[in-house]
Length: 431
Ligand SMILES: O=P(O)(O)OC[C@H]1O[C@H](O)[C@H](O)[C@@H](O)[C@@H]1O
Image (cartoon, rainbow, N blue to C red; front, side, top):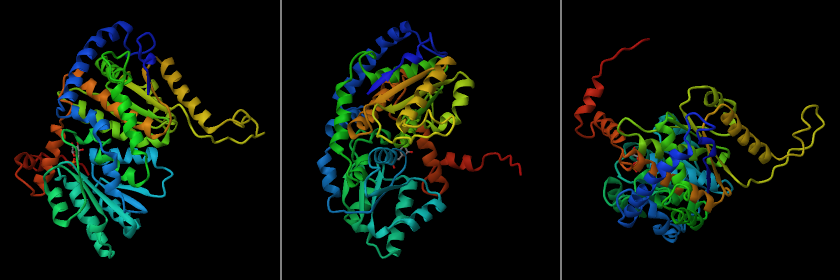
């Protein structure tokens, strides 16, 4: 993976950073690298995630799904327990005969429609919750079970669970004798894509798990004590430095449809890890070239508070644009859609640079397992190094937990006095 930070340098961008700022920052990156290396060596909470490419047992996951021959896989999970699987299958399993669906939200209209449409007798359900207590996931699973019962399908024959050591979901798996995989120790959900959490649907869809993990290992091998030698550190450090100078929004803009959900995965990673102590950089989601025709107006001409991160694969499949003699369209004929998309990508970079707006280019080799594994791993590393530079607790999410507890409290699922305060808040309703 390559990261080009040239368009974030001060001579070309505002907010931007100069070479001397980068050199100063590099000393802090070296310290952060020491902390990260120690954390990985000691398997400290969170840092252990960066050992997953080395530790994840692809064969164990393949064995767990062996014997299923589904038409569809349904992930039931939310946040870090769903976005890794969604991102990986969307990026790599587009040609699979098996479809992937995810139930993360509990919108009744969406859940009912999906269950009506799914071939339930040919669907494998992967229920994922690290804590085993997340209300949305457990509620959705109960609804899915009932729908399978109602359709005469033995759900216990078609369910795989991935969860932590203890908790209601673990107990349920044991009581029902369901195959259960472990969420690895010390790995927060948003850092778990390259584990059982993110890889089970991919395995059922024929994705090359070893390739994904090899990509992650290449990222681990590339860790070095300087941002000039490590693309993941370069990205994390530059995003942090730009935020410090006013780029409080990071618009993640892949120029490939297969990475549309990657921007959503990145949003959770960046927001939940770095949004602490009154700081953090707000992730925005965009897709090139589509959002070039909508959001780019704001990115180029709105407030100078953004970093735009553009991502593309170096290789794309061919799809020729037919020759045409229609006036003014001759320039398109004989080109390729990929060439057009790359021209759009470069035009966006040029457009931002011309308006002195910072962008960073991330380029992966291709939309293959190794490159996608490397991308996910490197973005996790970027997030961890940024967390070190911000000086925050990268691996917790107390604000999210507050909301989770409040929702449970409001449903009568536990004592949570603050939830009552929420319910009794002053209302100012305008109708
Ligand atoms: O895997 P679970 O325990 O069900 O958690 C699912 C999600 O729940 C919370 O909202 C956490 O903040 C997320 O980081 C997590 O990914």
